Length: 148
Image 1 (cartoon, rainbow, N blue to C red):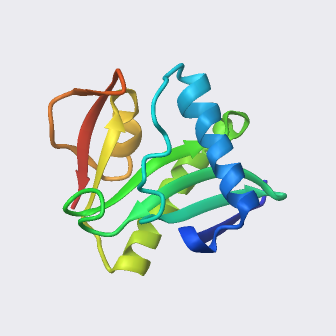
Image 2 (image 1 turned 90 degrees about the vertical axis):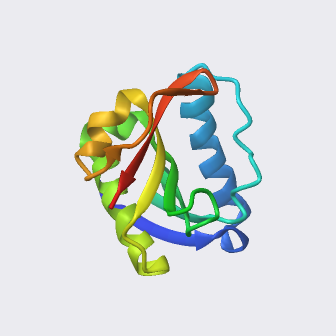
């Protein structure tokens, strides 16, 4: 596994890159999680797109937002790893990259996320703490978490 990381604004994404990241998001968030929801939410244009590729295949992805574009603080969303790569701890590498790029691109260390409840321990391992009660987002239990 030799992951190459790219960070791009929406306008800089090629049509192939956009197709690949939307395909990965649909594979996991719609098909695997059996959740019909509006993934194309009008926020991609505001985000920086962090893409992890292995031999030209998109295997990891996250959206990064500056403060006030999603939450009051900077934010990370649509965190996803291709199912066949999950046994490689790529999710942890993706989160470290996302936190690094939030600091590098926006000068921010405070980050807020809307996390699926079952991933609470994963995000806690990256210094996020739960800051809300459980709520439903697209019929999936979520919690707000912050990294100070």
